[in-house]
Image (cartoon, rainbow, N blue to C red; front, side):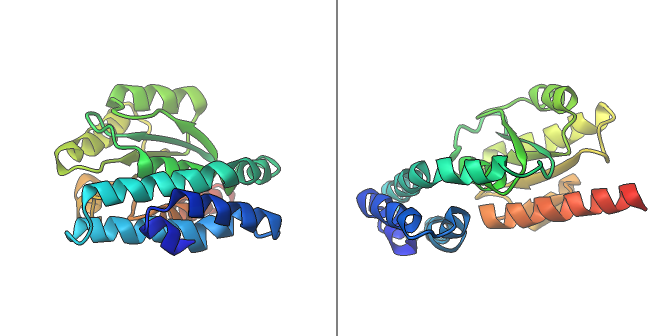
Length: 214
């Protein structure tokens, strides 16, 4: 599974996803342990100059092909559980790259979170309005480019101005993002990939629940 994504082999990834379902493999595990590992590796290779953009895009198409097969069953399993929390996702203003965000949305939704995906190039005002509308627990802002990272800071500042924090947690991610940047802008957490984002969201919600029952 991992190699099919690294190779950008959409047909192979599709076949492996179909085989996984036919063999009773948990689709979330298929993504976490197989396909997502491939796109993470591809992203790392691209980041250090060992993979070129056309190859990265081929890897992205391959994982989308696999997820298209697995997603219905993943979402079905997610909908059978009580929501773990409400999460708003979107890319920072000016950023139209959504491959990573979409993968995070799929993993979180399949794992039991209620997801409100605002799409790409989302303004701070849009994040705030949606957070108020749905009484969100977490806001996740993605930025692939260094030129759009400032948009993550702007969203966190807008949440602060509107009195939504610290109740509403702000998490960030994306190829350009680092833990240092997260600390600098006051984010509640950072993850470099979809699996890490899931663990981060669970940990934040656990702290919220523990505080609420203390």
